[in-house]
Length: 415
Image (cartoon, rainbow, N blue to C red; front, side, top):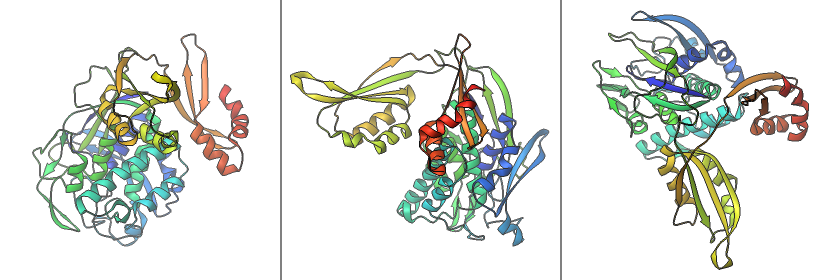
């Protein structure tokens, strides 16, 4: 599990996150095959060495081959900003696919050859941007045309970042205030203030400042990734184990980079504050607590949950809902439960949790690539398992049962 310390002193974009996550993992090569995994033949990825005010780092450039063919390299979408010529924050329809709906983008992700966890992360980031655009333009989410984030560059920025967040297995994030830039920016809708309205909506609740240089420093994609990570805006007391830099395309007086540090875990029991949240429900059908409700719990911040039968006073049967969560997610989860069940009261208390260190690796097998989770017990025994969502997806793809898949993969669990 990884703890991150993010410093967006020169703003943040999807591409900057993509580059910096690769740097933390020392793994740029896996991205080269991402266009193929997403079935986007009009995209290409190049890794370039760049220097920003003496800081040497690698820049992950996503090239839209449609636009390259149209000689739009210098001004891809008619929207110049302080990081890149792209990042899914353009407002002209230029190349093929720049008018996708959210459902079109989610279909691309759903068909991609990536882990189920990475798909879930990408879904959430795109949905956040869609909800912000929907609110700003007062158009239903399903009718929004994604001029801003439907190009292959933005899709790869977000899905690639989702893959790397999954691989980092992020358990906590600290962040400094975010530099937004200032001034006006030319868009399809005319001149707009910096930060652009959708970006500002996504940054709501996070501390920001304008900085000293004019221009757009934060894109909707960068803001959405930050929002997904749910950072704490406070200093971290953890030791730093690694530092990486994600560069923007332009050069400024100040270094145009996103800096992210990988922090060492402190005492396992002290690294996070956990809450156990409970409620007893005796006046609602259990069918309302099915798969959709459970997915919503996880999306709202639940780490784990249980649903069991309970006998209450006067012999009434009830359902006991128990949720484990981080203390910081209490308000959001309480609101979700109140909005989606008949309960009118919740109880909660702090709990301690002992966790084993874990490592998730993508492993090639005879059936395809699978994520295996490895943990090590205090007595140095290794436990290995594959995530059920990936087993289920593989079973569907190969027309087998999950039990058959897990049996065929069992040899890999011993490696």
